Image 1: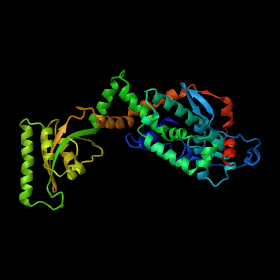
Image 2: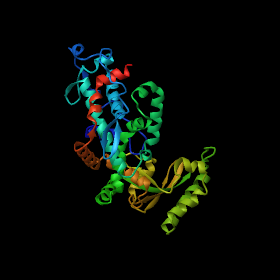
Image 3: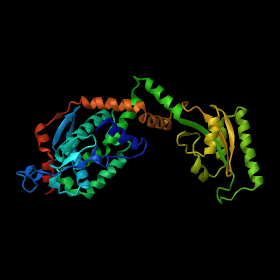
Image 4: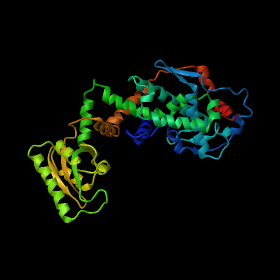
Length: 384
C-alpha cells in the first residue's frame, strides 16, 4: 500500500462517513494488463494435478507484531482479493492465474502469482501496523467509527460464502478487521492530532486550516410563509415578521445575548420547521461548499466576528451573526478540522510518517506457515 494509495482510500472515506473495508480492487490492479500465457501450462500445475495440496490453510497463527498474534486467514483474505480482481478482469481459468504475465501501473511486469502473494503480504503487514498503532491508544476495534458497518458487512459475507470462509478458517473477527483496516489509517490520524499533547503545533495547524476554510454563524430564521400549509404570508404578515427580525437585531446590538434571542425565537416556531433547517444555536459550514443559502453565506462573508445583519429573501428573513470559527472547539469543529487536515500537507506528512513506520516494521513470521500460503495452494484449497 503506497502513500498515494493510503491517502486515496481514506480521503474518500471521509472522515466522518462510514465507508469501510478494503478497496474494490488491489493497488495497481486497475492498470494490470494481460501480456501473455506463453509457457504457463508447462510451469503452473493445475489444482487437479498439484501433489499434496495443503489442507486447512487458514486459522493458523502467522505472525506476531507488538505482542499481538495475527492469523493466516487474514493473509488469505488479501490473497483472495487480488486473485478475484484478476479473475474479474480476464476470461481465464483460476489455474491459469499464477503464470499469467501482467503489467502493473508502475511499469513492473510480474506473474499473477507474484502479484497476488506480494499484495497479500504487503496489505497484511499494513494491518499489523495500523491495528498496533490504533490499539496503542487504548482503543478496542469495536470503538472505531467504522465498526458497525464493517461488522454488518462481514456478517453478510459469511452468510453469502459460508463454505469458502469455513474452508479457509476465516473467523468473523478476521473478516471485520479485513473490512475495517483501511479506516484505521484515519482513526490513527485522528488520535495523533487529538491525543498527542507533546506537539502543540498541531493545534495551531488545525486552527489555521479552520480559519481559511470554514465559517461559523448563528441564525435566527423566520419563515415568510405558513409552515403547516406552505401558503405565502400576506404582505401585512410579511411586514410583521420582518419587523420582528429587526427588533431581534436591535436588541442584540443593544447588548442582549444572541443565544437568548435565538432561544426566544424557537419558542415561536413550528418544531418541524426548525428541525428541517436550523436545530442548533450555531452552524459550521465550508466556504468551498456551503450548505446554507447563498444569500446567507454571502452576507456572512461581509461581516466581522460578532457582527450581525439581516438577510431578506422571498420565503424567509434571517438575522445572521458571524462568530469566530476557532472560539469553541467542539466535536463538530474537530471533525471539520481533521477532514481539512487529512487532505492537506499535514495529511501528506502523516502518510510519510506511516510509510516510514511501515518500512521499518519488524514482524516475526512463522516461516513454515508463510511458505505454505502460496497462490497455488490457495487455488487448490478453494477449488475443493
